Image (tube, rainbow, N blue to C red):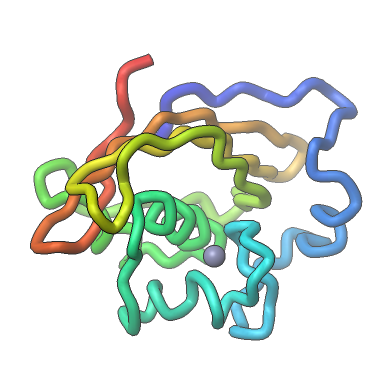
Length: 157
Ligand SMILES: [Zn+2]
């Protein structure tokens, strides 16, 4: 998921005050009572947490995409690999511990419902790291493998 990392214009923080409160000092929510990193407004325990723990499965491509963003945010490498298509899955991930995924915007989606076998989700994922912040913009492709939604890869621009 690394196609076009563009830096935000200096001084502009699209996430405003909420962003700073939740992610003060780069803290990442990891308890079930925390606000879910995917920005759904639900708690982690009522949103992406059960997916990360394998207690439930994503019903839609967008839900899987959101859970993968949250997995990046909490550093759940095993979930990221598990929710990747076997054909395109990397052998391992090298997550940068200094990079914090802070905010997700879902821009558009096609297919991906409980009645589809494939779908796409276009999103902007905001991150920050010491002395820098930026945005990853990607249109991702998803499909089902044995009924479960998985991430296939990014679509060409
Ligand atoms: Zn969530």
